[in-house]
Length: 145
Image (cartoon, rainbow, N blue to C red):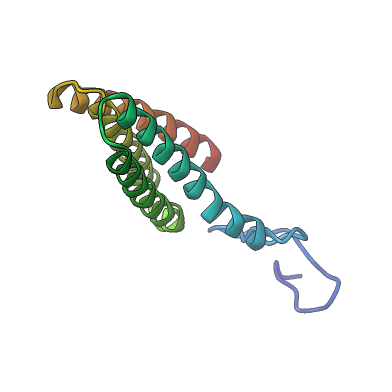
């Protein structure tokens, strides 16, 4: 009997090469769609509020601190959403670099609000971005293989 049967009630395991569709009895699409927007929104809100805290703690005015926090939240939400939506079209290495770059840029930006030099902020962002990229690559590689 062939691998895929058109007869109702006759389901066989996928034996051929290539990706296996992950459409079981659980509605994966609804759950995945919820995470697609919930993770970037949560990350953006946390980044925005921490930006407001750091900017107020380092001499920015109330209005400037909140506008800076709002801008950081919106930009990180947009980039995070685009990254999560496009993750299936990227190979493992590119995806890990993208996650590392987003995290490193966020950490570097937050560090720049503490009145340190641009070089120190960029260095800290680079270190954290590299660490996040390596961890993301490890997680993605082992979940895919």
